[in-house]
Image (cartoon, rainbow, N blue to C red; front, side, top):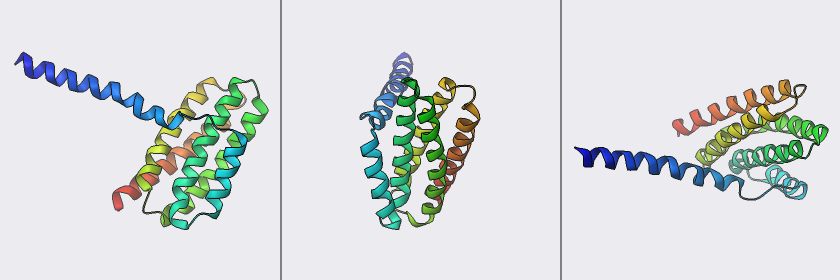
Length: 153
């Protein structure tokens, strides 16, 4: 009985230990303005079936970039970046119907992005919190919609 219990305990611990390693893959490279502009151009020119994932990737990069801007004390730039995120989430919604191939990857990326935005919410200025909350709510809606589309296919 102890062997079964300890094997189950080890399995649970390994699962929790492996989760941060997998999630850290999203944040391996730090985004910069040039890579964001290139990704935005690529997303706008992509085939409709790939736009959902590319816009999800762009939103993720912008959230990471906004976090860097907040950490550097560039609050006005971070707010402007968050406003771009808010606008781009509607493009994910529009591209969702056309993208069947990478929906699961987009959903996972959006879930991770929402987690990072929640962290940003706790570190943001009080005057920026309504924008961050509104963006987070919109991102959560798109993430949920993406998850439902994954289950449909």
